[in-house]
Length: 519
Image (cartoon, rainbow, N blue to C red; front, side):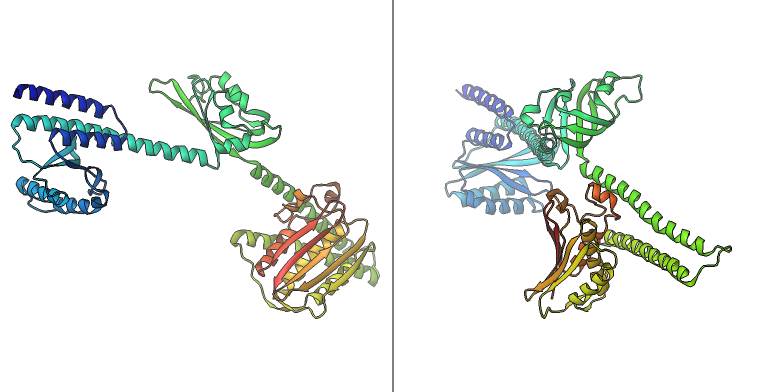
């Protein structure tokens, strides 16, 4: 009879061990281990506590114990384990008292340590309502079960950590600002993240499984070519310096919707231990803004060179003429040429000051102001006096509200703003018309404006007109002087005063530039 019980016990142990080792979900493994242990020991209550990275034991599974008792029970377990000179009998006596605290019927406790490679994972505790003495055979069976349970828990913990890392990696890839694509060893798309969907116009579900050349079609390639590299043996060729090296590709991609997108892609191959290609990780970056900035910078350098050359050439020409020894110039001729030299010198000074100001704003995002009370109407009158001598096609009108309050501001900087706005109004209304300057206050701020009857701005230009170096593309823009810094500096000056600047315009209907200043 006893022999039959031992056989059934071993069969039960084998059956439970198989069920445990077949699972990788940690919570399910702990549940099965705990249930099996309590049944084998004839118990009614049980718990499993696992050791965390700090050495603290945390209860991760319970049987027959109310959830609200778990925090208190965890504190008691850790306090028990922290005791010095704790012998086996004392440990079990205190565990039994803990069991009685949970249920007065409990009479005995069993603690099975869970150990893997001599490292403690945790322990299992079972409480039962009867007392009994375990034989050496019982102890061996329980120890074998504990070893199997420790292996199952250890494997489940590893799986849990790997699963968390996999989920974190998947979240990083999906929500990365850069496009991420994974290719298999036949250059078919195996993974395609959301950023890449936005860049290419392809949905991941449509792209996955297709050859990469079918999804990424180039309108123009500037650097690298994946297809040519593959034909040349990349990334496996042993007779080329490209073997195993990342491949850089840059150009204008033809999106699925027919539009183009400037992209840069780095293809990085991964290999099996035997050297076979495993997969290729492609990191894709949208370089449209970089290209635009580079193009704007090139245009700026070209423009600024022209802007510098013109006054320098005039200054040099007029100065060289005045230095001639073979001609006696009348005083009015000298005054005229000296005036040109002075005007062009002022133009150079203004240009250099704009460049330095833009550089300071870009470097520290700060603009120093010398504030005082400024009467905008008086300032606008002085600006009009200067510009009225430069054009015969335009009519200047002032529309300032009566009794307009002075604003606290830097008069030199605010005049620079009005100079830029009026200058642009003249440049971009070549047929002439009215240039109107006005302002009103609402008790908390002054809102000023400069309005023209010129060519106007498209919505695309309006969204970028205040960017550094940006100039409206068009035949008129190419004929007019400018560095693309005027409106950038104007907005920076207004924002430094605590205000804001904006534009209202439509092609063919002129433009109105507004700015507000707090009172």
